[in-house]
Image 1 (spheres, protein in one colour):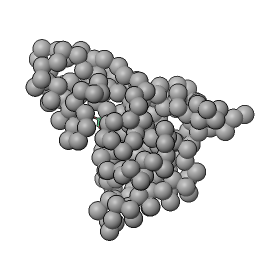
Image 2 (cartoon, protein in one colour):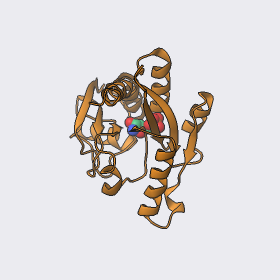
Image 3 (spheres, helix red, strand yellow):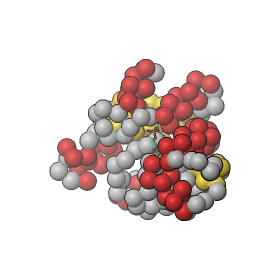
Image 4 (cartoon, helix red, strand yellow):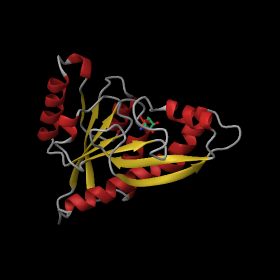
Length: 203
Ligand code: GRF
């Protein structure tokens, strides 16, 4: 029996993408990996409640409590080692990770971005801002992207994408919900399983 890939999910807010991963683990869509840790940048994140409801260990590491980015990332690395983590999934995670950190986990950090990269991505494009930009531009199709994380914000190799229609009366909130339901919550578990399986086989 191959050892399951141990996954840490990094969160900051509501945790709907974490919930999709937890549901996928239960349904068998995510079977090559196990969610071994939820790490939050925010002590009040509802994502922590979702972790507790599924008996997943969690940790809170708040950037502003550290003197430097290096001290902050050292703490992250220490916790990841403690939990013997193989794969990191950023799911609504809002803290900055430097090149020093991302280079330590090459092709072992995934992120879900709520647009079809290279559109509406990079510095300043997160959460509702992404959908506001898409509506302002007048695109007829948007979607979500899962990509590997490197030192460039939203710049790593693209793994999967899924398109979602923009409808005439969409508000940013309505569009965000559609992109979550029809793209993010489907893509992230699939991509996580694909990478967890490859790591399990030592590929
Ligand atoms: C979502 O817009 C997602 O696309 C982005 O972070 C936001 C919050 O996600 N990655 P969640 O509900 O905390 O998973």
